[in-house]
Length: 244
Image (cartoon, rainbow, N blue to C red; front, side, top):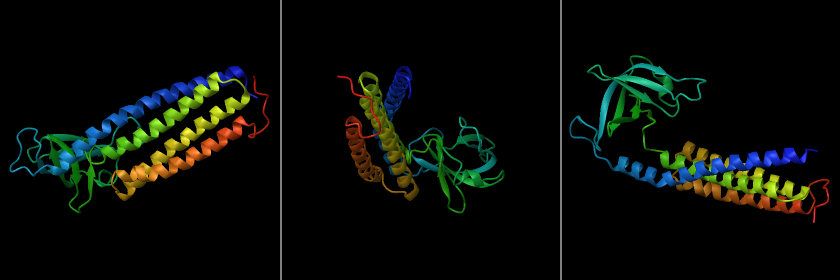
């Protein structure tokens, strides 16, 4: 069996990790509304009447030639990027959240169309019709923020409660109950990630994330409740007597 000191150390680490992730989730939740407003502004923007000479809220489609691409395979901290050249010779460095579906197929010399909005390339389009948002593109950010908020807040809350429960409660049964809550928090976070993946893969509206995550979260919470009660009753294995 683990020593009491080891259990306390793990509970403290769980609580601290959950607190940090909970903070990240709160920040993501606060960004959802701003991301929604920015996406709506982009979708409602009109086409520019002429080439904008400064950053503008209108949308301009500009032809570029690909100079080089760098997918940064295996470099977690680096975003995939491309260097695009204007007809004037000016080079624009554009980064992407991922390499697919457009960037990975680009070669030096290819011609692409860049959608410029507020002075930044927010989307790159191939002649064949394929398109991809850049790191500055506003489309999809609300869903990413919402999915991240659900994953981090649900995991953070459950992890914090479970970590503190195991830390302050006496008895092996309460320690197991805290572990049950913590690991079900992982399930809640995974359900949010799965919901975001399904929404993104099928291009469903943002509310689909909540529609998918809600029933999954209820199932995980029901399981957590049942296993927590079983732990407190001593039904999850050989238990040491609970301290009075």
